Amino acid sequence: RGADPPHSAHRMSEEGAAAPSAAPAEAEPMDQDAPAEGSDAHADASGPGAGGSASAGDGGGDALDPEEMIDPIVDGAKLVEIEEMGFPRARAYRALALSGTTTVEGAVNWIIEHSEDADIDEPPPKVRRGDVEKAKKPKMSKEEAKAHAKTMVEDARIRREKEEREANKARAIAMREGGKEMARAKRELDEAERKRSLIERQRAKEEEERAREKIRKKIAQDKAERRVAMGLPAELTPEELEKERQEERRKAEEKAKQRAAFVPVKPAQRLIELRELARAMKKSTPDEAAFKTCCNTLLKLLGNVARSPEEDKFRVVKLGNAAIQKRIVAVTNGVEFLVGSGFERGADEGGEEVLTMERQAINMELINGAGEILQNALTNPMFGVL
Image (cartoon, rainbow, N blue to C red; front, top):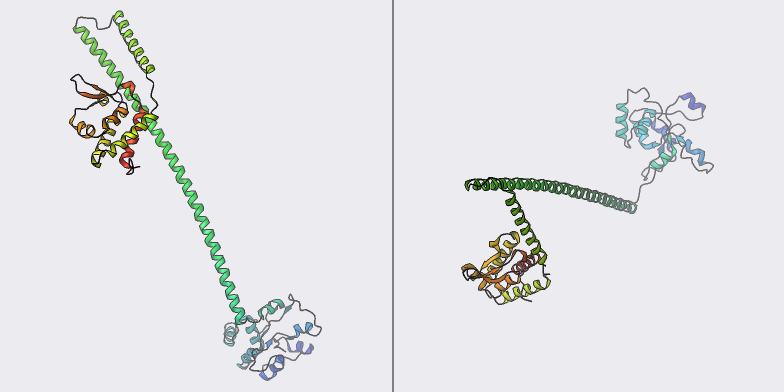
């Protein structure tokens, strides 16, 4: 039997159990179920009626109730060893049960630390049989321990991979949200820039209108001063006003007729012809620098017309000019490219050969297409090769 904690001697005698003794020799009968000395296990000792709490199921072979409250079970050999040191059995039993250690040294230290406790010699609280059985679970073999360790490593790997996936998902969500925020900010900036540009254009338009009005007033004032200097009234007479109105109407009608008579030529076929001219121009010009100079000059001339179609000087190319002679005339199909872009051959008042383009003959689609062909010829190394 296991060691009995010290209740009262007369109660224990009434129950028919032997009173606890501090002598080691008398503790041996309580460890009668323990294996022989030197075996792999020690006997366990419990409180009052040690082993008796389990005896209820030992005789009849019934299953033990895991919820049953029993006295704690301690190592009987360690209990005897502590008793041999001179400590009461009840105190040694309580120390082994409550110290949370499995060594004699730990139990003795617990006794010393709790020597002033009023219940130092009282029995320890009972415990659930299921907890005791779980604590007595046999140790795993080497193979079982290895398999258990492998399982724990695999579980840790799975858990780590899951955490990494969740972290990657969180980062992806954060990146998407950040991208949305950047796109929203860009839209807001673009909208603000658009509004600012509209305001600037409106302000420029108003300033231009004020400047024109100022110029009109200045012209009217100068005209009035000239009339006064000529001995005429400062204000126009009704006849003169009517004559001016008729002249303005005539000019407006003439412009309207010019616009109605001008039908833009669809440039599809013309652009094909220009592309062929540019290819022939590159093939016939072995000097790459001369070809690029010609293309850049043609781009500049066409660009001037596109940017300032009202400027007469940009719509006239003097072929007798030394720079034009060197850069365009000297290159095969250089002049022909300008003619295909809308210029017409002619001569000025001095008889010098020139290329001109009438204002109403300007075809922006054709000019822009010609510019794209020239740009491609400059940047595409395979242009004219195939």
